[in-house]
Length: 231
Image (cartoon, rainbow, N blue to C red):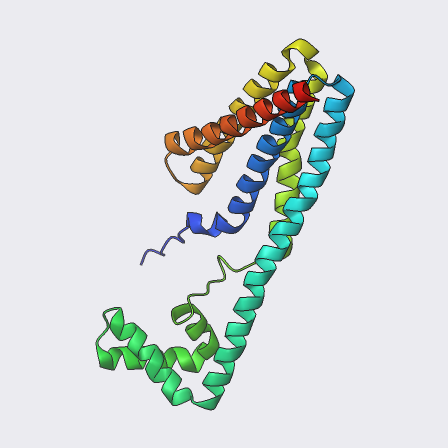
């Protein structure tokens, strides 16, 4: 008898992929927009670099803190729901078994079979069965605050570095168009990589990421130019 082949699903990657793509995308857009906006105000290369590095540091810490707080809130909610469910199972296991069986009936099982399945699952791991089938919790997409925070901080810094390197290597008169072009290329590549890793189509995510990045840089450049001339 042939052994079944274990299946790998892309949903396994959703936790770190979301944080990684968001962090790198924000790193490129935020830092490039900041650099372009400051450069459009006709400031010196040293001031532009200072703004870029400040944006990298502040953005990385902001992303880490934001992700940690957000995902921690989700984790707290999950723990509270599991605690409540644990008490309900201990107080009335018969009712909870019937409740689980009704869920399976709603999914298409015969009532007798649904009750048998519920009883067997309750005997093995009652809380796990209710967490999965009643509350919709899954170990695959469970909240991991530290992982999300570190991933966001590292990927933000990684995305912020290329625009800063472009400033170091580009003559001042070409700085704005070069940073703009480099950032757009990187955003397009990032969008394509995220789509491929996530198993989605490539074209639409690539265009979406590049469009919003270009819009952000254009608006920031316009504001920088207006403020620079006004001051």
